[in-house]
Length: 482
Ligand code: SF4
Image (cartoon, rainbow, N blue to C red; front, side, top):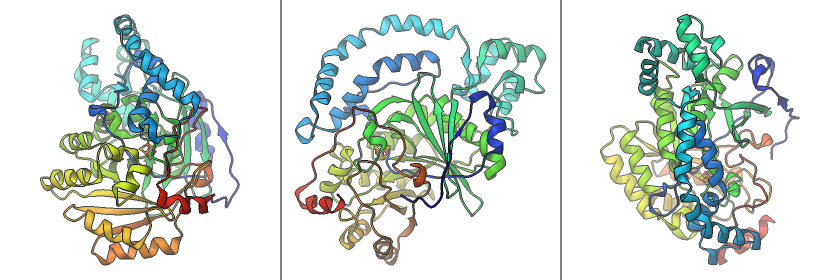
């Protein structure tokens, strides 16, 4: 942990957030590595949110079974050091899943009831917003004016009072029938390196984290979360310890970028880049992520360049294919190992989608994409994946895949069993890749004094995802970490 300066917590009430934040100082950062597996072939779908409150409530009910089922499918019990509590909860899940499914008809009534209440605007695509505005008896042009006030023109409206310049009746209708915000600001934690971690409360009481990372070269990145927790259980990731609580709605994802611009633009300048590397595996929540991305790149709104929006995945192959076919934003793949043996251990999604399949899929899918490079992320773990042999294997593995490679320094967290690779060794590793003609970058830690760095987001509760058995030949390296 880099504790080069003291830090402070700035509690901010949601209503007064804007003004207070403009007076606050400091900054943080983070980047994240893995993404997720779409659950078409095994993991249960934590079917998320249409952008309505109903969805949030319903998912809350499903929270525990979804989390446990996700863990169970990724981790056969025989390979897991499951606690008795965890085992009994799994048993609860297995026995009760059918009962929960039967609850659906009643929920439909709730859905209808909720749709009669306020419309959450940030969950609507531009086309949907236009239709909704017309259904209320107003012109499509008024939808565009509203869209610009929500996302563009440096307004980022959070209340009806901020809708300057709109027709009086239209504004009145919006105040009566629309909800502008999906998140409430909880606090901002500034890191000594300029990174800022922002905590948001969700309507159901859960908390998510977003990180804003200013960079010297005039680029500022917001790192957004796509889920509360994560089902992937990557062994080096603090978020993974939480298990999956639920998917975020498109509104909750988009609002993180809106909030970041609203709160911090005056301090850090324009936020130009978005990375989906916060909490969660974005492609496990692909419907909402694609919808959110489309809102973020809309040219009359937030207008992020598609090249500057990067969605990360741990290697969910079917979803990865869908993403490459439906979306022109950038893709990052968390590689993190050069053999199935190591990847099966540190990224259990590899048991479902093997390294060879993942890389062959990329090779084939990128053939028809013009000037498109995938970003491979490689978190360096001392004694596990950082040998010169690993570097040479990477050179072979990525043959025929247009790519760039980020070597990321591991960020330790409470209870982590890994150590970071030392800087000299990272440089040696980088040199092997560079000499083979690959484009490679070293990414050192940002924001780790605030637990805002890669793999450090979230807060695991009492029931945590299990640690997997360490393969025999790494036992010694792991003992050195203790
Ligand atoms: S466990 Fe962590 S690193 Fe792995 S996909 Fe989830 S958030 Fe990303």
